[in-house]
Each structure stands twice: as C-alpha cells, then as structure tokens.
Picture 1 (spheres, helix red, strand yellow):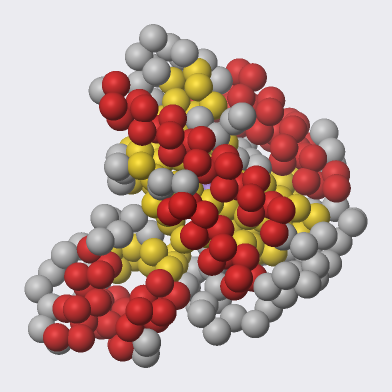
Picture 2 (spheres, rainbow, N blue to C red):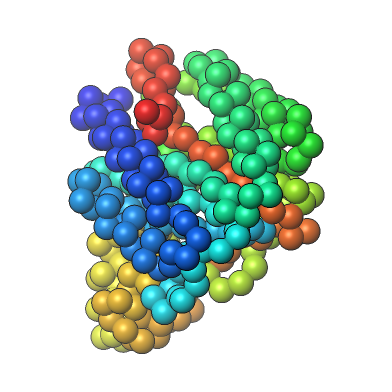
Length: 296
Ligand code: MN
Ligand code: MN
C-alpha cells in the first residue's frame, strides 16, 4: 500500500473517531435528529474530512440506513439510538458506529454488540479466516442471550468504495477466506432482541450514483453535476433538497428511472426486535501490523 494512502486511512479513521465522540455527546432526549445530523456532518468538514456517506441515526428496530430529510421534526426520546458515520480523506474511508440507549432498558443489548466487536478485534490478524470472526461475534452476542443480525455484515473498504470485498460475517458462514496484508475493512456486529434478520422497509433517503448515462433534462443534468461531486459515494436526498429544493426530487426520480441510482431504504428487523450496533475500521498494513483506524 502506498504510504500516502496509508496516511489518508489513518487520518480518516482518526477524524471518524473524533466525530463519533462528538456525535455521541449530542444524542440526548429533547435534541433534534436534524440538527444533530447536520452538526455532525459539519464537524467532519471542520476536521478536514468529507462524509463517506450521510450521517445515519437509526432507532429501535431500524438497524441501519435511516437518514433524516430536511423537514424532519423528530426529537430524541426514550429510544435505542445507533449513530453510524464515515469519513473519507482522498477516498480512504474510516467507518464507525456506536449505540446509545436513551430508554434505560437495553444496556445489555448495547454491551452485547460492543463485546462482540472487542472479541472480533482480538482475533484479527493476517491469516484469520472470515468465518472465525463471524463465530466470535455470534458467540459473544449469544452469551448475552441475543441474536446477531445475520444478513448484515462488515465489509472491505477500498478507495471511494464503502462496500468492497470481503464480507465480514456476523455468524460462522463457513467462509475460509483469510485476512491479508494491505486490507482495510470495517467490522460491525449488530445485536437484536428479534430473530436476527433485517429487510428493507420505508422510503429511501440515501442514494448512490451507480451508472452514468446521458441525461436530457437540464434540471436533472444540473443535479447530476452536483451528485458527481460526491465521487461515487452514498449521499443524502437532504443534501440535494437543501441546495436545489423540489427540483431535486424530480431529478432523483428521473435518475432512478434511468437505472443510474442505487437506493438504500431503511433496514428494519423483521420481528421489530430492538437492534444495537458497534463498528470499527481496521487496516492491516504491508508489515502485517493491525491498526484499528477508528480506535483511540
Ligand atoms: Mn458504518
Ligand atoms: Mn460499515
């Protein structure tokens, strides 16, 4: 791995971790989702990074991919709140997440995801099989009496690519692929009181440009130029509506119809089980040293 790329990963990880700490301090009963989300995104820029994806604040049975719109009026109440954010520096990504229990009822469920992440990090090394990571995560969560979410997983991190190979499972999936030098990836256990499966539910507010095609409408072309500045990474509908108003909705519809846009609807536990998450990004450098990029 190029030395500069490695430095960028380390910087992105450090900013991610600092912004996560800042974000955690804002998640309090009575604060608004929208202001919190926007303050966190602003902090990413202030510290010299860019969002690798829109800041996501998913509550209770929503495991991931919930992102407010610009007219959202919701405030934090007695929810279980997962904050997931990513930062990139010249495409090198740090991705991390943390769950805060504002209900006072799910501290063990929060601990289960954190313990699973800790145990996974302990065995991460050159030569570790992916299925071993999944087993450790599953066992840690099961020891608290909960289920891992088995159709969510960690993922490789590549430059300007948040969901690269390999898939880092949250159960023993039998994958004997081994970790190698030069790999960057995110490990993200999810624990739930439900059966451990999520499905897509609700309207997407997170999108990603997937294929470029010629576009006729001048409005859509203008908005496509903005979307191209996100460099192929996921973006929020809110970023566009803030800048372009209702035109953004028209353009997103057209780009979706043209098959250019990938949508990320909220992911909800099928039994409406409460879900918690913990996540760190890891780099194994060319010497085989394991660096927890978002650790501190
Ligand atoms: Mn994440
Ligand atoms: Mn992730």
